[in-house]
Length: 224
Image (cartoon, rainbow, N blue to C red):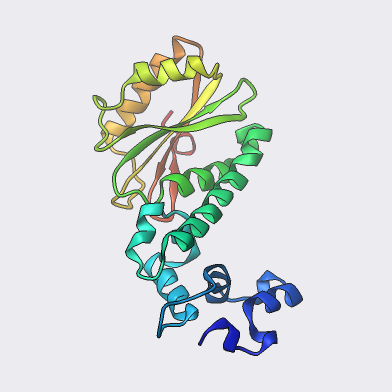
């Protein structure tokens, strides 16, 4: 069934305007964004497939633009609209981290990092650079691939911290396996970076490991 075939009061747009977003199901919300389906296949079926493919909105918001290509019916326009919503969510999470010290919003830091790294198929090592008041300056992906002590270069992290005049930083990387547990190599790498950055008076506040649906904090584990 297409949106135009529904009674006016049952159409997602009218329903949202009259009763608020909470009145819509997940499928209705996504159908409102997608607007149209495929010949012989309604927009609700398409929305259902997208949500099933990405395991709901949580997975969809962690998706990369390239991931959306595998869904038949998501052409460039629809992919661009979904990607725009994902980017708005990322910026919304970044905004409070830029306005106040990150320790005032620990869970928001985890959510922000998870949104960036949670769906990656390969390991990505990122750094959240912070100013002297521990407010977010930038999140930058610095290394990709299988991460070891030899593939993450401390001098590059130090150089970038100095360029941004960072006073502190938070390390972050993902485990594509989904298990957010630190390896011995993760612990050694963390200490190597911590000692290198101490030489230029930049503190490592935490190292976050992003797994499937969870984020582990070295600081909370007492590993720093």
